[in-house]
Length: 155
Image (tube, rainbow, N blue to C red; front, top):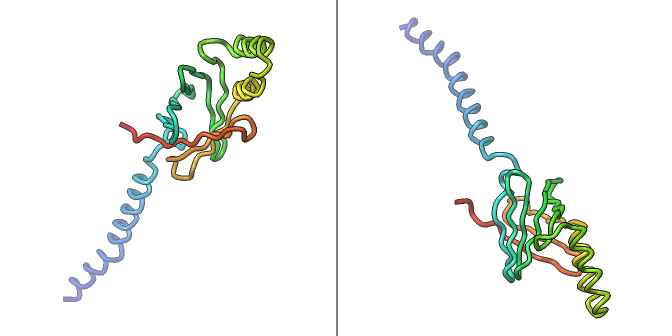
């Protein structure tokens, strides 16, 4: 009887902590499988109003388009902010697009405010991303325009 009790206590003292520790390690591993924040943010984002769409690729490139215009470039993550660095605008390099905007203003001075927005957009944009990585807001040209985005579910 005493031997049986000692065996049971030995099991309780040695095996149960190992089982508990194993369960904790497995839970931590499973929790860590979500992937990096960048991989959670990468994907397709659609504007809540209007046709704008932003695609953040895992290779850190992006494309954003609306109304027949597409901006392409590179993105990076800084805290809760996605920094968008445009390289092309409607198939033109940044320098070509800026020259076209300047020419447009020369021919039509009333286009000045719109031209300034385009220039500031080409300088770069920041999308503030929610903690759950499902919502984002791009503040364009110092608050002249805001675009709210929601992340499409991964397929």
